Image (cartoon, rainbow, N blue to C red; front, top):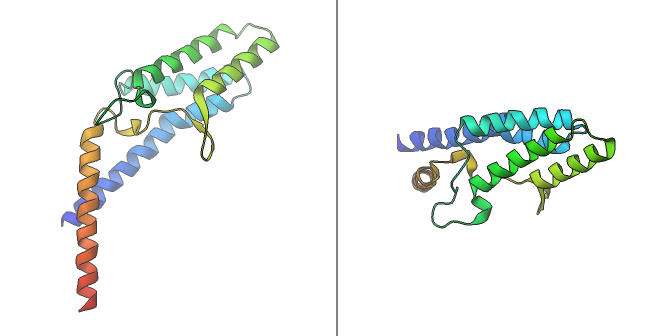
Length: 157
């Protein structure tokens, strides 16, 4: 019974990640990859609408201690700055538009271990309930581990 609850909870975590990718991070990726300021602004506006609707505008995603890579407020202000830059260049020259698009791309992405990745505070998917999700996921993994050990002991008999 507990193992079923653990699997359902972990499934819920996966669904939260999928929804965030569909409704926010996917649009941020498209904004970073856009070839025109109009397209980038459209995609960025969609992501910002999600961010604001879900209250992802301040705080930290960290549970134990604060680090700046988990600063939700800075990330949100950076998104808004990109939005302002894009709005300001719509009537600019092609060179100005290209420069703003490069600046937006550099603001929204970073070079990581696996190539270019979006700059997003870790575990923002679970914000503002990060402590609950961290604790609950730990309990779920423990329950599943105990269940698997018990299952393997039964199979040995």
